[in-house]
Length: 138
Length: 138
Length: 138
Image 1 (tube, one colour):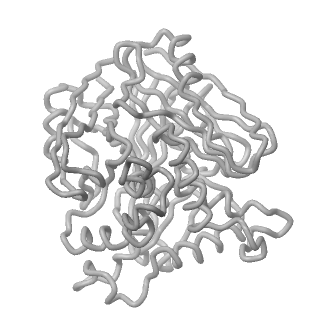
Image 2 (cartoon, chains in turn blue, red, orange):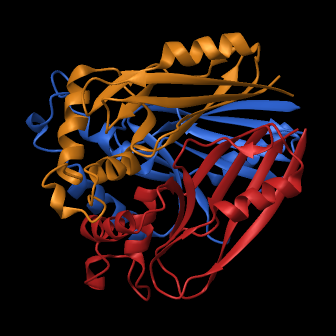
C-alpha cells in the first residue's frame, strides 16, 4: 500500500468564495504514482468546506444566496458563538456543504462522472487556510 | 491490497425518487472478494445523492416535503442556474443529502447498525444516471 | 494492509447532545498500530451524526437553535414518520450534520487542522447507541 499527503493553501480575498481545486487534486494524484485507491480531500479549517458540484457561475450565485438564507451572516448578535467572533454563520454553512469528499482513483485518474468538480468553499476568508489531500492505494 | 469498481445505473421515472440500493452494493462487495476494507458509494451526477437512512415510507415523504421547503423546485426563475436549465433546486437538495457514503467492510459484510440502508437520491430524474461503487481492502 | 475495528458506545441523557469523541478515536488509532491510512468514524444509528467542528459551547448552542429551526422536533404530527414514532426530526437533523467523517492518518496521528474535533451528534438519545471506528492502512 502506498500513501501520499499534500497540503493545498488558499487565501480568499473575500469572506466567501468557491474555488475549483480539481487541477490541484489531479496534480497531487499524479505526484503520488497511485493508480488504484481512494483520495480524501478535506478542509483543515472548520469554517470551510470541500464539496463536489458543477463549475457554473449561476449555480455558485445560487449557493451564495441559499446559504445566506439558511444560515445568515448578520446580525452577528443572533449567534452565541459570536462573542469576540463574527463567523458562527461560517460554521453552519460549512455543515451544510460538508467538510470532505472521498473520490475513487481508477487507472491513475479521479473516477468522476461528466460534471463532477471539486471545490474549496471558503466561508470565512481573507486569510491563509489549508486543504488536506491524502491518497491511499497502490 | 485489492480494489473493485462497479457502476450501478438507474432510470428514475419521476423527477425525485429515493431508491434503496443496499442489495446492489452488497452484490458488488460479494463480487470483489474483499473481506476487510472500505466501500465508497457515490453519485456520479451532481443532481443526485447517495446517503444512508431508514427504509420507511413515511420518512421518505418527510424528506420530500422537507427538501422542497429548504430548496423549492419552483418558481424556476428564483435561481440563476436556471438559464436554459430547470434543475438548480436539485443541486441544492443534493448538497443537503450528500454525494457519497463510505462504509466499513468487516468479515465480508457491510458493517452496518440495525437500520442502516443505502439510498440513491434522485432529484432530477427521468434519464439514465450512474452510481459508482469502489471497494478497497483485502 | 492492516485494519482495525472498534465500537464506541454512548448513552446521552438528553434527547440531543454533542459529545467530543476525539480522545476515543485517538485511542482506537493507537490500539491499531496503523501509522499511515484512513479512519472512518460513523454513527451506526440513523438518528445520530458524526461530524467535525469546533469544541465551543456557544457554537453548540447555535447548532441546537439552528437545527431546531431547519427541522423542528414539534409538533410531532407534522411528520409522516411519526406514526408510532416521535423522532422524524432526528432523521432530518442527522442528514444536515452527516453520518460519518473520514480522517487521514499521518505519522500515527489524526491529521487535523488546528481546531478540528470529532463529535458524536445525538438527536434521539436517552438510550445506548453506537459509533463505528474502522481504520485501514499500514
